[in-house]
Image 1 (tube, rainbow, N blue to C red):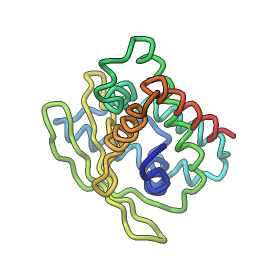
Image 2 (cartoon, rainbow, N blue to C red):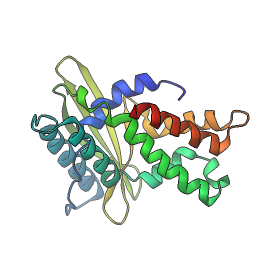
Image 3 (cartoon, rainbow, N blue to C red):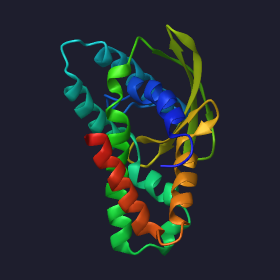
Image 4 (tube, rainbow, N blue to C red):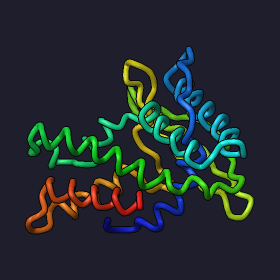
Length: 209
């Protein structure tokens, strides 16, 4: 893809791998901010235990990551957002295929990097309200061999539990970056939504080889 893919992978592995293995249980909370904090904290605590578990193979950890993505992220909402204005213009068949391919692209892009975990820890700070449904959880990834990384989690109350809808690393939104990348591909002559879907399929195939 375009833009800073290598840069993003370098930062996202710390974020995604730190939280790639657990669906936090529903927790009663007095506010959506507390619920969002509980979600991120539970995921982070359990992820560290899983990443440090030498009895699990890399394949098993990748399987956990795939389940985590489906259970803890609102992938349909993220998919609609990253397609941007082109979502409305796409046919229902294109929309369905894009959501499936986008989900598989996310799995393929990040699960292969799980093995690079090297002792990072997630330090939860606090949460602020964005609107009546969303909160932003502020945290920092501390690393044994590098400076801390500021990491914010955009968490949405879906009415059926809290879901993560964006990860913001050092002020850079994952969802916004994918949206810009995808728009750049779609707008190229002869590409369109079908061209983007085919491009993502190529990336998935390359990552799986």
